Length: 390
Ligand code: HEM
Image 1 (cartoon, protein in one colour):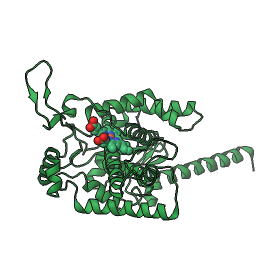
Image 2: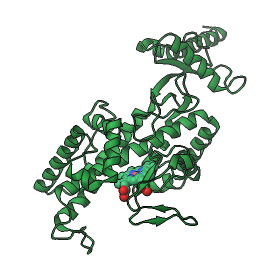
Image 3: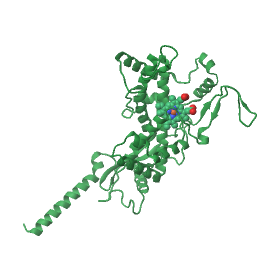
Image 4: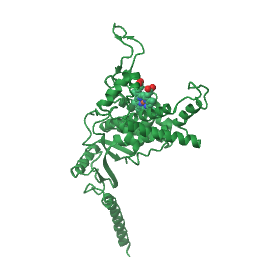
């Protein structure tokens, strides 16, 4: 064969291979049977013009509208020749499942696995514990104002099935650990030491009044408050944070850059110190907590008559005082804050490294808080568009 024919044949062969390869990439979603955007540009896929004439937000908005008009909740596209998926996800539930799993293992020593099994009982009763209706609210205020009378009248502020579920889990866990002498590095382990010995293993201070420090019911109450206070607050913070980041792409990009830089500087490893020392991440979380404090009002009761300084007004002993945290935009410190901030950071770091969040057609301009929830929660969920970062 003549050299020119050889070169030409080789050229045609290489071009054909490249062509078939690119085509197979563009056909990826079609082959998977996933709804896909038609007519990708051979080289740019569906992002033609991005970073030159059009912003990614506009391109994604257009693609998203196409899928929406077709009535599909997600769809495949090509980022250049890379298959990618645009998906609208209700983030609040996903994040609630993440923090439920974290608290489940730290508080109960139980793998709740709600990320994998969304309709698990932990989610069902965890969510139910935060539902608010007029009867529960009335009972809550009554029990706060007249705790002794409420106790005598057996007024309960938690729902029976929620309480039964958590009490059963705690009882089973305690029984199992005690009969099998299981030691684990978690909150339950510490509570069991106090329950059985009246003190923590490495401490001399006796915390209980008698030989033992906690009754079974007291132990269960601690586990329950730890669980409830720990999963909803952090997942709410994460959810509002992503909502704000979706609406402020410049801040989202900068945060992603700072996270990536901190991890790269640490040899690619995400450690406790890395997570705790990204100043911009702190700023973003603090601003989220200022704008959306999950616990929107704190209640206090003066232990004796209190004269409001500089006035003649007296707040009588036992009066409920409400501190409107949301209105004054001052987040309050909490006993579990370090844990809460840590799991919020771990969640954000992992999500932002892998995904970009943008508003979808269902993302409201302004959040309307769900009146049926005890904590601040967006009505109708927190729908965002989620794409893989390439
Ligand atoms: C970002 C996450 C969190 C926020 C915004 C938050 C916020 C709050 C607020 C405002 C209070 C009321 C404080 C007061 O009355 O002055 C509180 C109480 C409490 N929090 Fe958190 N919290 C978070 C995470 C957690 C976590 C992860 C845990 C447990 C692991 C937890 C456990 C508790 C407990 C046990 C209380 C009751 C403390 C008491 O009454 O003495 N919190 N939290």
